[in-house]
Length: 231
Image 1 (cartoon, rainbow, N blue to C red):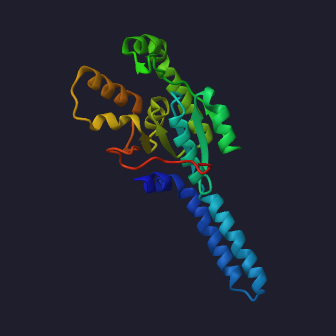
Image 2: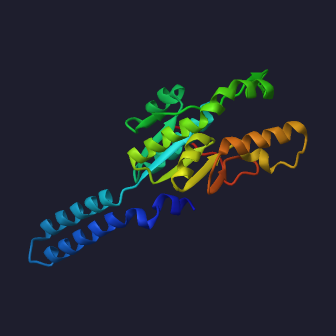
Image 3: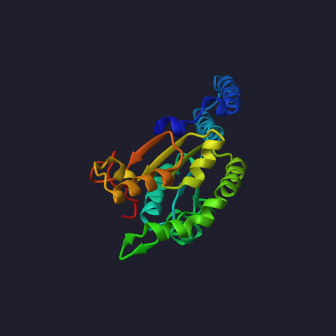
């Protein structure tokens, strides 16, 4: 699925493919003429560059602002993908210094997030619910704003890390969504205590919409930890 997400829908790239086909036929006709080897090499290099531009794809990556783990994973993935795709990162403003420091000139856009209330490093569920009530009421409006930004950037796919805002926005306009996170590993635990059930419900809500999911974890995960290049 990761391949299909990053390749995109064929219909989305049909006009670019037609342009590329026309360009290829023109180049091939010229290439067959008696020109020097060095000129042919330059033409080939130029053709490869133009084909990459014509078929380039813009991907949105989003993450929640709770802690730095989600942002670190987003940075690691963006560093792997930005050589082949155009990346736009959607994240809470509090993460901007970390993202800019590690990703340089990759565009970063601000989004809200649902935060946790904690007591002695444990989630306080009643406090968390009360804290996020205003955000729940604003949720449809924020999703609509993100939809408009997706369209302005011509986003073709989303990779989300525990962010429901962008995932609902991407789903609204029919974009493929890959969900990558760690906390949803709780869904694989066979524990039916009240605390465990609550944690599972929160995980489902915060993942939002997606077509495929990858759980990042040492234990019961689909993949192991994703580490950024600097580490």
